[in-house]
Length: 552
Image (cartoon, rainbow, N blue to C red; front, side, top):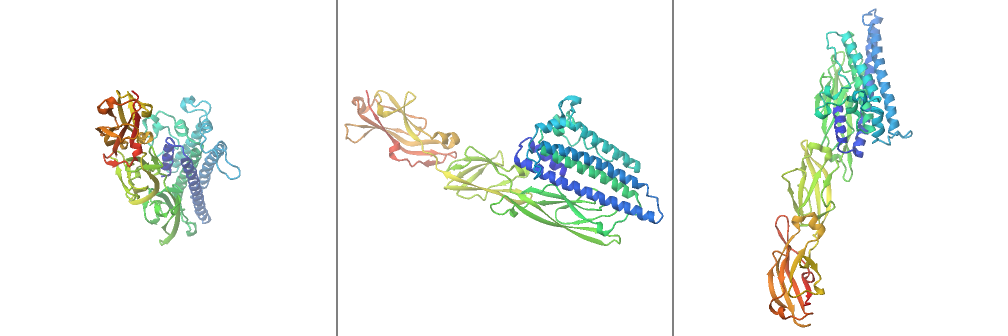
């Protein structure tokens, strides 16, 4: 599971080298370091118990298993040599990452160039694509250790397979976990260290230390099985866990491995708790718990979720000893990513389409927006579960984001929007396709086109909501300076947005003198939204009547 966590985080680097991803590697590094340390402590305890058993038998005059003493020393010495080497490499990485000598903080977690040069050297394509950097040396150390371990395992028990332990550094072509065809022709050195920040490789070093401890533990367990009459004392039983991560996004699964310090084939522990499944071999178990978003206090980004388990182990007399275990992990509110052309506002009675994603949930994200408030409705897209269209009718709108994940409805976040009435259009006069100022004068033998012009930003953002029509367009003529304007002709305003052509040379306008006043009046403008709903535009009359002057 920890290996899978590392692979997932590494894959996410290709999409987004964010501060959150870098911090996730920092947390993973700490978790792996703690787990490797626990494995080391467990191996030390197992070594001591084996030695105690051998020495007790020697005290009784039985020297049959004394030959295993140098074997135990060899196992621990070889493992310690590799662990020490990895620690030296880690110190080099901390220097590249500019570790603060006081706080221990890695200040340049995202350093990639110096990190790559450290691993692949000055000639990254040389040596058959293996480079001439530290990666070649690290691979040789890991391969040598595993080959030695397999030789010792086969020597101690020839009946078992010759290659009991898998290699820790495999070229993608030989690694069944690498399924990407384009990566199969790469070397382990390039595939493992290309394009990664230094903090990711610090976590990887802790993983290798844990792998070495696992191989060491495997040899110790084999040795223990060969030492007959192996016993243990009740005081040596220790329950421990190895979580995959300290932080879990609300709705996702938290996993931790449960074990006892002397777990073996001869001692079968029982694990009691919710979400438990036995690991292969039967000596450890994995606990899986759904992270509950309800533990996050209102207005905060994370909360703490507690859990308990019980491990039962038989003693030498067959009685079950109960070892309680309590744990906790942090549930973090996943980040909501909203993509739209207008993030901060919504337009009333319009189709405001947004894409609402929660990347931390991945494919487990199953959004539910039904608890949103403020008036209006939400239309779901047939193309994507993340895409919705918000049609608000009030002055503000709260988009409530939930996810039906892992059998529970998890509250993710509330996004509050201001809802604005769309900017009103304006009326313009056009002659020969060019907008004109009617008060500067128009020729009475010309045709004037009356157009309704939508607000530019609104039309660009929501073109299907920026469509208009009107009841009519009136051409009026005023005789003298104080006369009441008279309607010469009325035109349909249905095509007001495209333009309504008005011929001036007709009726009484044929004899109008230069300087005479005419008016163009637009009646009852309506906006047509994306649903073809007609919405009346409350525009003052001064915006709907445009005066003009006859100049010839």
